[in-house]
Image (cartoon, rainbow, N blue to C red; front, top):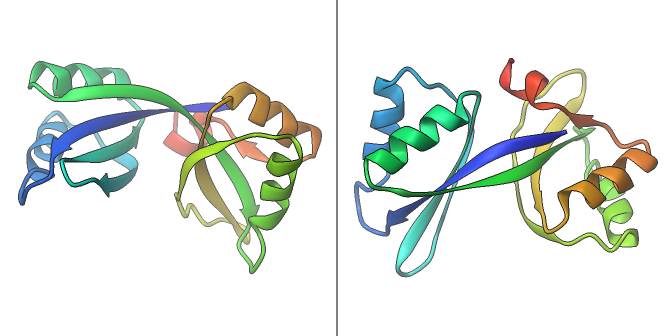
Length: 143
């Protein structure tokens, strides 16, 4: 149930997002999802893609610092409060959410949200015990 994600550390300056994305595009690597966050000193480009290992190799070879993390894709109702049930389960289980972002793969009235947990295996167990659906990488990334 864990989805590999790459975090690429970028300089916080105009135009720094373009080169790593150009590199991946030129290599024929298609993104399934991304998020961009910033601090005063640097930005963090978070990427979800099928061939993450190849992407990591290319990016590191080109000089970027890249970290791999495991994400969990939670399938929730695409309606007001759809996320609340999952959050209630995670809170009751004492699972810490480091960050999350919407993937918005809409299908059959459902939406997918990606979560980074301090304890992914514990979060997966808590969600599974509560009957909350999660998507495996093969569904999310088309594997």
